[in-house]
Amino acid sequence: MTHPTEHSLVQGGRSAALATACVRGGVAAGLGLGALAVLVTAAWISSPFPDSGPGGVLHVAAGLWLLAHGVDLVRTDTLSGLPAPLGVVPMLVAVLPVWLVHRAARDTLDPGDDSDRPSPSPSGAVAAVAGGYLLVAAVVVVYSESGPLPAELISAGFWLPFVVFGAAGAGVWTALGRPLPGQRQAAAALRATGLGLVTLCGGGAVLAAVSLAWHAGEAQAAFTGLAGEWSGRAAILLLVLALLPNAAVWGAAYGLGPGFTLGTGALATPLGLAGDPAVPSFPLLAALPAEGRGTWTHWAAAAVPLVATLVQGWRVGRTARGWPARDAVLTALAAAWGCGAVVAVLAAAAGGPLGSGRLSAFGPVWWQAGAATVLWGACVGLPMALAVRAWGRRALRPRPLPVPAPANVNANATASATTPASATASVGAGAGAGAGTGAGAGAGFGEPFDLEAQPEAAPDTPSDGPPGVTPGATPGVTPGGGQASAGKPDPGTPVATAKAAAPAPPPALDLDLDDDPGYEPYDYLPAAWESSPPPDPKA
Image (tube, rainbow, N blue to C red; front, side, top):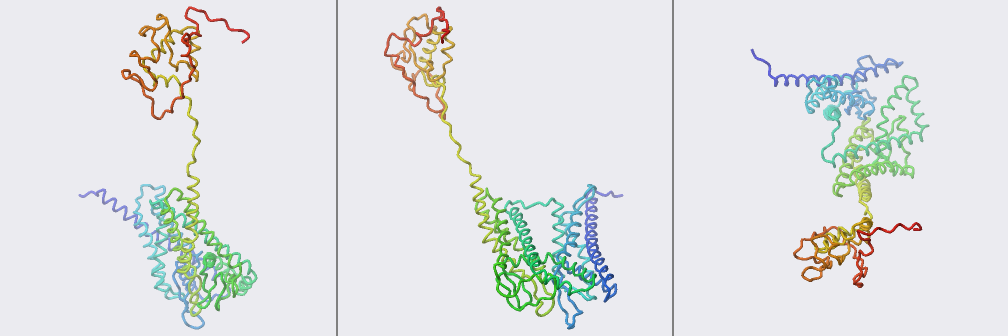
């Protein structure tokens, strides 16, 4: 009888977790497809003149679901009988499938309340969720081939894996706590890229809204001319709402400079609308600029990328205040390239063909929009980042503090460190001779007139001094007859040296007491046997 080992149990648990993740991906694909099928079915039921049956409705829902992933469709029921491509993605419709894949990958690694449940590795979770989703997508691609909107196989083989793996990777990143790269430059570049993208797309949305409000009459005429029944107008309104993110990207590309194409022979830029545009009747297209040269109102669209790159550079400079200039430059350039790459992807999704012939190119050109974004970031964002960094370093520079004046060094400590032992003993003798009632008052003077810091002569009477002191010895005179100095102590006597960091002592106060041989420094103090005079009441 064999017993299962821990290794086999772990492998079995991970295999079950991968299978669960694959099922999650398939369920996410089914939910997105089902939501679009319900919406298309409701529009078909409310239509007074339905042109197809339930099978046609399901084919239309499958085509819209593939179009939301960036897959180009081919219209076969055209008036000319020739197939016409359709590649403009309603970007608001794409939010639902992307969010479902993101949530499936996030929940795969997030155990929730069941912490004992085994979870796969991050790469395994991405592969399993994306694999289950793509299996359902492959079935939908095959099913769409028999309908009025079949999928183009080349675009399906590229855009479907790109979108699914990107959304699954974002979900796993969210489950791990949204970690940033370990290098500080990469993390700062990612933050600046996100801030610049939000500002750029928000400014593009403002441009589109202002232009649409300016041409409100033309937009209303196009809306009422497309459908007369309420069901048709509701469908047109839903399509307008689904294309609002596209309008924001078009506005951003217009402000960046390259603009967008209106067919193969027309180009709209802030400098003007050149060529012969082929514009179908649609409410959002009524916001396009008029033909001819641009005016200052069109040139003002350049404020959108200007503000976006300034904000992006400010974010980099604020983060790089303590970095070297080389790191700040590389971070600003990395943020510019990252923003340009994302703008190129958005421009490719927001534009595309609307038909054959002149309508085969419609919307912003992806590589031109991306290159213009990089140029704006390098020419405006980089100087802004360096300027903000320089200003931040100026604010962080430590200010010189006021140096206080050197404090008055206690004369007692200075005299103890520089006076020879003989002079110290003589001073001690004089202090002992003046012990008494006035001794406390004399010892309390530790100020510039502190007499303990001055060399003093010993009392004339030997009995007044303490034992161990030679009678008649003069302070400051060594037993060998040499004059002792505070700076030149007796070589035979150990002297404490002052610290090098201590300030120089103030010069000794010369009282000229040596001129009078009959005067002693402590004559003004009462002797031990004398009583102190009574205090003067008038004083």
